[in-house]
Length: 301
Length: 131
Image 1 (cartoon, rainbow over the protein chains, first blue to last red):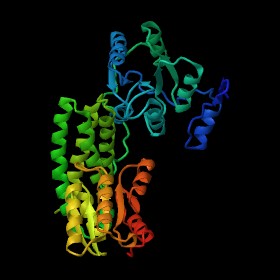
Image 2: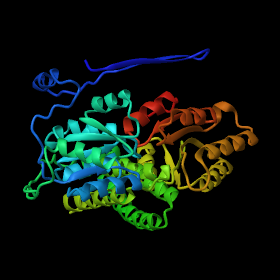
Image 3: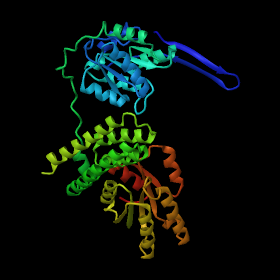
């Protein structure tokens, strides 16, 4: 089945037995058959646009720069995402020919981002995803495959081997992208809040709920202004604190998309790692605007 | 019954007050300091709080600390354990350990944020507060 097995033992401490088996998640019997004769590698049912840009998902700035330099030097267009969540957003907005995915990242790691991309319908089901990891052992490789990646490139990157691998996966050197007008399939975004449920949770008191929502929108707007300042001064703890408040308040209003966007910002703030915070903050702002428009257009006429 | 809702988040305060208003008169405090002052004055007026809901993460005093001080006040007033206020922790913290230790620190039970009316009602019933 292409798996590995092993054990580690320490005298007087105990032993650890482990095995890794590459499995892919199937949504249908057809998929299962397509994968059955596959030797652990994600099977591409159709090849993604070979001339689209490459998406590099990497949280560490020096590594981003090295990979970008190699790829752009060879003529590829490259977009960069700082963590798994940002990668998912990039892939929602446009199509890529190849995804290079770091494994260890804040907010969402490469395994989880890969699993989520594979579950989406559309081009991400079949695009080649290569893991980037400093661990070159068989176990790491198989874990990448198990998450739905097509292979693993080990760091530090060696220019020639890296570019050879990329060119092989894209079956050739970079070409002009001819699918700029391509619009990826998008699932409709969830509603900014479940208004009927919120009315129910406020014991049926719609006027009270409406006044709370108005108060919340004004407060959140001010908090976002404060957070912008904290981002410019790099005050991670304060960013986390404000995001925590927005997360809780919006969840109490059933505004889950906003609450989830705030949660990601909160985690980033609390971890102290502000890499990619601009993307996360932009998403938070977008969700707040969406909620504002939704409430004003649909319910407060 | 008099009820005190303590939460620095305005949305939570209004939502809890609304849901609990069927049980009695609700006061609300956005922080620990005002909560403690209200707790004392309610006792002085002869109508102590029967139920307190307490947020944990607040800007001035942590909710667990506020609860500890409320229990100290009750002790100094020589309130019998069965007449003491029921205290309900309201927390967004999914770390179960945190919740359990607050449970030992003078709280009667807890509910998770976001507040769900069903969950709140179930917990209040469990605490022996009729809904």
